[in-house]
Image: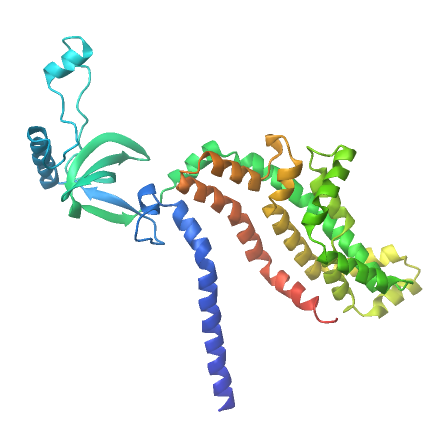
Length: 379
């Protein structure tokens, strides 16, 4: 009976966790879905996660209905289709061109049997004036259809990504961001690991006092030190380069040092003592024994650092001047300022920026969870 109850609660817990996982994944799902929608569906009243687009199946009945409405509009501009300019006569075209020849031809219509993607232009009464898409481009084909003739079908608008990449130099911004991320992760992992080893495994006078003093710096907001740090880098002549974004990582981070110190205290001290008896130095013990054993915790530090650097906006905004050095976060802000009305393209760029982080976490989640668990065993 007890085992049956435990199994039941186990199943309920998994159902709750799956439900919470789906709930937390909805924003990312919405981001991807919006990046693949056409503009008319992004601002639709009935928001759907599945990308759809309006289509019309062209039949003889649809074309005859268009001809009737167009003729009625030309005869009585105040009725159905009011506001749609009637097609000019031959004499009107000749007078407008100042010649006796007609240079422009009427826009063609789709052929019967075609299924075309359309864009609604205006609606009057039971009829809607639509414009036809040919591939990803809008054609000159326009015709009137009844409201029920427009059907929403599944459609992935990859055109948002291609257009966004034309105006957004993703490759350049990605290269700049990865360069800063790799250097920052390397500096943080090496410096924090070394300091944490000294605070956890090496006994020296004042160790605990220095440790608590280091932890107290975590209560100091970054906004307080922003101006002094900026003036320091300005005197060093580093403004306009990536040095202010990279060099501080080689000086350690209080939170990551604390995390690694907790992990090092879980490793048996006999390993270090045996190495000292064999004549190994403290640096040798750290590099040959402690560093390889702390891979799970180092993976956590590296992942947190990578995500923080990848999403950092304020640092590059303050220290980088040349737009050829901008990171993805700055590039996305510039794209938003210039192309704020093209929401599909903005969502496409945002998806391209978020997707690498999601993929990275997906492949490192096992090591990440193991590192967090092990680093909190011993206080």
